[in-house]
Length: 228
Ligand SMILES: O=C(CO)[C@H](O)[C@H](O)COP(=O)(O)O
Image 1 (cartoon, rainbow, N blue to C red):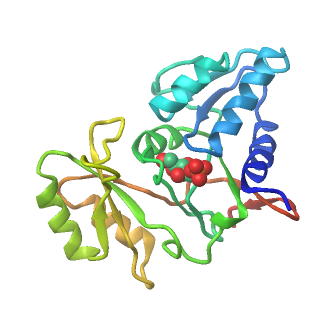
Image 2 (spheres, rainbow, N blue to C red; image 1 turned 45 degrees about the horizontal axis):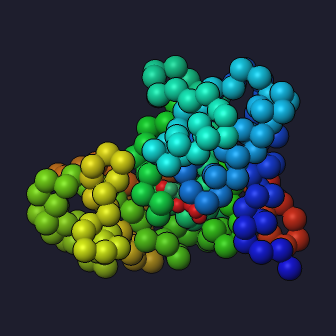
């Protein structure tokens, strides 16, 4: 049976097939998006794609993209033709939870400007409802974070500051992340509005109504899901 890394790569390659010469491409973050960036670099180096400009959603993806020979520019107000990224959960309507890799803010800032957001994932990321497996990452300002967490705990009690070691995890934007377990019955748009209205919250890992399609790889092959 194909291992998860093989599946991630298969999904990534399908998404890269949508990229054409001259496109401005949003470059996602994470172990699945990595395969898409590497393949884009390979096609550019091989001369199969020309005039590609990448806009990276994290410092890590920026570094990788340059290493594989992609031209990388910062995000400006121009639209991106396409963005390719992974996800932590993919709901049947293609609403997503993202941000376990910690890049949610730059991902959202970038991908909201993409004409097409293409998600790449292995089959373990597909869920019936958001929050089924993954926590919802909420990026919060480092200043006053204990107060912000108290406000968040009043809404989502089962959560914790992301702290892999002695110090809290620091995002590329100098912020912290609160990983919130979601209760069973939530309405993502309502919760998103509530959280975004909470003092100290910068953004959430809900990506609602943004993805156009998802390539999901399983041992049976790659299936293509589109937004209903
Ligand atoms: O949102 C993300 C990073 O902020 C990633 O896209 C998400 O965590 C999926 O990562 P992976 O492909 O490594 O499972």
